[in-house]
Length: 550
Image (cartoon, rainbow, N blue to C red):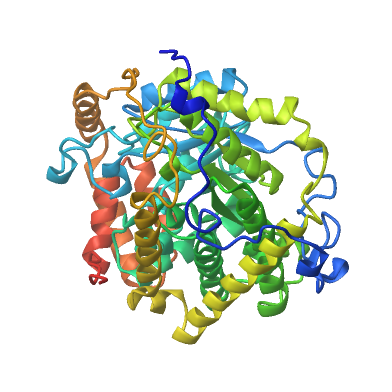
């Protein structure tokens, strides 16, 4: 509903309260000058785009050669419903798919489990067996798109399902199934450490969880060399209340942990490191976010070259996907979210992201409607084709404020990394509750600032007004009924003995040293369910219960 501006809207704005800080609380000077970056050495600290340490980007020509991949995070209800949304987004010009799974799938539970009641298809698509993955990508050539899957504890299981779908499609095309894996491109998030730190959707304890990660590293290095085996995710760390520096530090230290575990498992660092990718948040402070991405590239380049002695330049290059900040979206005045998202998306592009998802205006209320998702995609397209920002690599390079923030964020992140190193690594730090406490403290400070109105959230604690409710997407109980019916059909049609033998081999392999990926592939081909496969692993490894952090 359109409303004329009120006197309160058009009156001269009051003087800001409190100190001038970034959204993370970092103090800002009134003016930045050459004195603030007097120690900056261009060749050492920046380099041209495409050159070590990649502060200015990993590609010499920025986006001139290729735009970022435009993804829209989508998934709800049944696989058929989500497939229809994918077809719509691809027709609207989307260039990559991103799968949101529901809570039962994320937690490795079948739809008929007692803990799945009321959750099937609610916060993402329900995928229980290979039959669901087949339906999810029906009519979509997985060899022609890149697919990102936000899945962690059961990541290797969902990857196995996707690989079998690719195998089926390749067999239909050429008669050779596994040939389809060699060029298959996409990402499994597979970042279990951030689950223990922030999102809390874990199943197994940290150490066996890391076993599953290293198994996928080894398997994909040999069988699916273009698949990004881990998307090391700072997004959820930031959403939990971390500052920009904490997001940067804990994400990169998680990446260091994965690399070390891969090396300890006997893998050549240059065989798997080029397929690691990262996933960052884009919050509302434009300069701080751009600086964060630039600092991330610089830190990672030095870590991979100097700490791990990687020799392949692709191992030094930090590639990342960005999603605009869901935590910044407000249920109040939801159309304000369009503006927030556009500015956050601009920050990601100015910072050199390789892939971008823009949140929809209604996501503080429900999963996005088709119209809202399309508008979010159009936001990216306008930035790409109408603003001119894609024509210059690292346009903020040399900015006094951005270079100073890049240095400051780098220094703070390195201090965190050194602290975690002294603890013995990220697994040990998580077991001690260190990153969890740091994030909880920063989240508390931010909320205090909002409630004390030291930080303005438009429409929430300033410029407040009533608004008409907007139409939202509703997932009804027919989704659960559909998925339960399919589950019954799958169980009735499959060979029960083949399933039992595959699950027995999986359980035995998890208890030994065998790579679990081929065992999971066999179970998936037999149409074992996600709950059955996760339960086989639960019987060996148990479930993790976190120690409370106070």
